[in-house]
Image 1 (cartoon, one colour):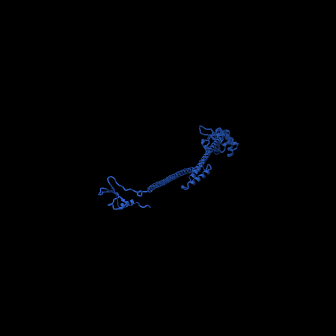
Image 2 (cartoon, helix red, strand yellow; image 1 turned 120 degrees about the vertical axis):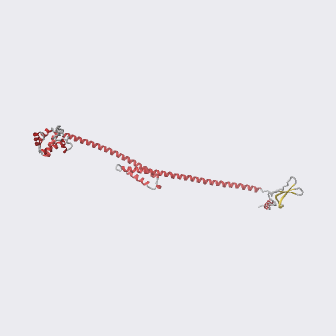
Image 3 (cartoon, rainbow, N blue to C red; image 1 turned 60 degrees about the vertical axis):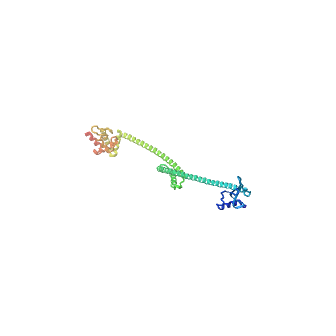
Length: 341
């Protein structure tokens, strides 16, 4: 450590002394008896440490004390101070820059985290929306598939549809948070496919059944028409005179035990009454048919087709002869006597 310079020591003493005696910031001028100006500078004199240094000037010239090399600040102190100041400024800049860099890094990290959080939230929202849509579609598919399964059960094989429907129903009945959206979508597509195939197969079965029913109905109608025609043909054949006589002979023998002699009387009796025509009609009396029943509606006691069926008329006539006359020959004898029977 260097010893303190006398001038600095004098300045420090002057600054700590009484303010009224030697103010450090005030210059006092006085005139000596010889007319020489004395100037008190307030700077301590090394030779007079207890008082301010005095400079005398004569006329316009002021005499300044010379400063020695010892009084000047060493250059190394000056350069050292400048270096310290520069170093401090550089250090401060580095610290400030580092702080700004750290702050910028922290802000970037926070911004990145905020973006990531927003993306996660959006992803969760998208997943929730997709899951809700998948479940809604699945429920609609289940409702349609159940209806198809019920209506098609008796028509086609619904095993594939019912199996797929059961899997989809089980999956959608789980806790919502644990639902696998992709699984729901896959089972929904499979169930819809099975439902459409089953519905198409059932529709095809309905068409085939309708065609079969139409064919059966057509066949039944044709058979009925054929039967009716056959009956008409048979009736027409039985309504001829020869067929009517053959029917009368057969019934007289089988039901009443009448032989050929009674049949001969019967042939004569009904030949006189109607000529064995089932369409014969007496306009004056209203008698009708082969036996000339009066009125003709009496023969409805045998069958309603009395007006068109010779067998019905013959059946009624034989019954009437048996009850009224006993035999055809007795009826024929009465007709010959009174002209009616």
